[in-house]
Image (tube, rainbow, N blue to C red; front, side):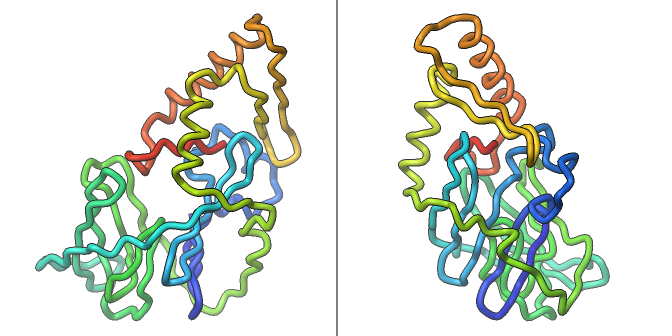
Length: 221
């Protein structure tokens, strides 16, 4: 994942979105991290894909940080800790007051310094800075999907919830790689193809049944 920051916005995205190699686009490589988040310092816009549907939704930026009286060194920077309850998890962030960039990875921002590391207290998720560089130009058109349709998050939740109940009864698009897709069409009969697709999708859901957002199961593939 990469965090790209400017005076007007920040983008958090999967680096594979900027690569053409099909090898880097396989569904087996953490599909739950195939998303992009645009932060315009007022709201977060989440871009994702569900069953061939390119979507985006907006939501408020989490603001209720509690700055802790705890400091440490991280990658040669002096950092201070802050905590936040968000999306069903407790998060701990290490931010660097000396770096006057007030954003960070995933949906996190709003601390008085760049967030260099943020992790869930349960140990399931951690985003850490591995490299910090300046003045690199990026083509946002390769990151943001211009075909994404706006949807309310609650409507997306409902759509995915209905899908999970009986995936084989839906038409399904699976992107094996950037240029290789598999299309399943429900015949209207609960035949072997229906059963096989239900088993496949249920296995996929079971494999990745620990989404970042514990309040909303955002199945992304």
